Length: 173
View 1 (cartoon, rainbow, N blue to C red):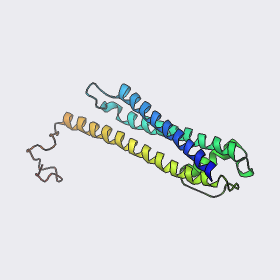
View 2 (view 1 turned 90 degrees about the vertical axis):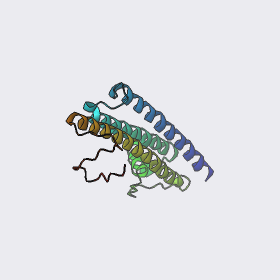
View 3 (view 1 turned 135 degrees about the horizontal axis):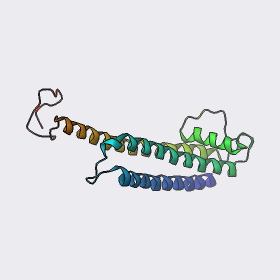
View 4 (view 1 turned 60 degrees about the vertical axis):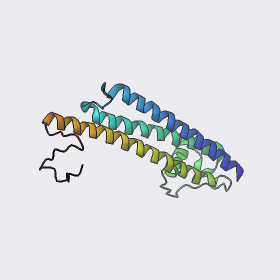
């Protein structure tokens, strides 16, 4: 049981490192190419920022799934996982916690690794969800602010001026 835990810890460390470096690289790319001088996403680049972020995060997960698949191929050369394609499929199903059950590890020694991969997948998918949410929130709030300013309907949050057309404004702000 010690060996699967050590291998699992090594794979988690590697995939978390990939997620961290990939996330930083992705954010630097977005900041460099999609932000204006004030640090806001350019309004004409809002959708691009969201799509690039989503695709970049998906690419990171594909690399992470591939790393787990290679580990399965190297550690469990058994019939159900006898090709890289089968290993990638098994790893993707495990990483995303779908767990179809059509392929299972027959080696009792390495079964624990699948649970570790599922926990790793939940952690990294949650990280990606949080990052994508942050990009969407920042992008679309900047996009909305830009268009409200252009239309003349913008009012600074917390201002005393109350607009009758805003039912959500209770005047307490």
